[in-house]
Image 1 (cartoon, one colour):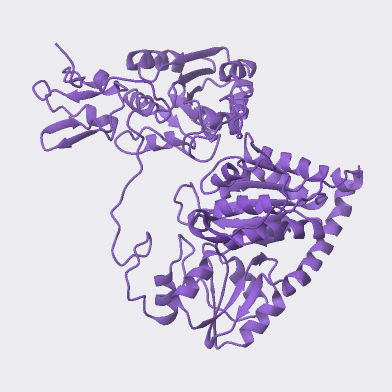
Image 2 (tube, helix red, strand yellow):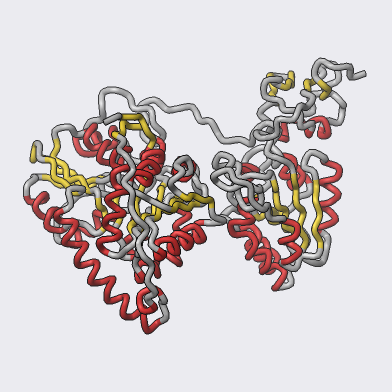
Length: 584
């Protein structure tokens, strides 16, 4: 069989293809985004971006009950959005198998928190599988679908940033055709009114008993006997770290982290002198193991914050780290220079935050590239909580402090507006707020790699579709004051913000210009005329990577400049001029 280097995300997509998945849905979110992008390459699978994770799972539920095999993918915080249907889908069960991939982000490389998705499996009472490399990521999709159909349950597959993005060898197979199962109307199974839900809860508990027996025999949970002085219980990426740090130790590798195999745990614990559990984030397995009466060390030695690495394991268990330096964030022998994230040169969001800071507005922020408007030197964002919270929290600012009325601006991106901003805007209108909402429409889901959304006019597979009109949606939601502005015209932008912020009713400004990384139209580049420059530093306040200062010398890097000309409008001495042109 052919072996290919694949990331975990590519492997999950391949696993869906080989396992006969018919339908897949997701909302893009790092580190899960590439799963659906790769699924979309397989013509045999109908794949789509959904407006948010809740919708993605709900569409998947419908496809599953209709008889299709389904894969739904999202990042860990996306499971929060999808939790409502997930909890009840555990009661109804499936027809065609359904796998929900949750990609966690220990270390918060690209997330606002590092919550542990394993708790959702326990809360929903559904099994969770956890691969330790790309081969297992591919194989576990098929296993999860089989479990789903055998036990009439959705199954969660937990990935993490390291599994999602690291590449390991994968042995590819052929697609196994799986027929769509016949659909049969079954009210007592699929309509969760209280009377039927009470009956289904009994089924869920009976299913848990069957799953507890299944995990004892599953080859995904295996004991690797070596030196019995030290035994380690681990799963996922931590298995790789343990094998590297403690090559002689005995290991209980758990491919299914919920429910746990109690008898196998007792067998393993009784066979080693000192027992450890190594797991990132919460003591999810540790607490359950201790509740079984098994003595084990875990979070006494390992943190509940951030990632765990081989050097840390060797240090905590053996008392000595690896002899070779391990250069990874969080546990380094040699610190890595910091490289803070920054808005791209010519980013369409930069001028918005420059202006909001200038006008001293209170900015209720959201999730997207524009979240970087909170960083120096712009520092023009007051809050950032979750997708869509900007509009709702903006109303809360206004309601919570009368002194802030007329000073609050909610900032949200186009994709995030479709995700969960519309309900917040409806709340502003309904509850007679006067909050100004600025929708930064750069025509794409930019931060996760330029995925399409309901406003772009294209599907995940690249097929043309109706592009929803943000202005018309805002009007339908009851907003009467709707303006558009060009982010590269500072004078216009300032005037519109002042006017709409002062309005005594809800207003929306749609700041519309294509993401700079996608805009390939020719533009003039700029440079700084050193004879005219008075070294005032105003241009540096934009935080544009193309502009730098070396001592008293300011310059524009022509390899980074994209010609947005915002800096030209900021400069009061007319020192920023077209590069190589006649600027007389």
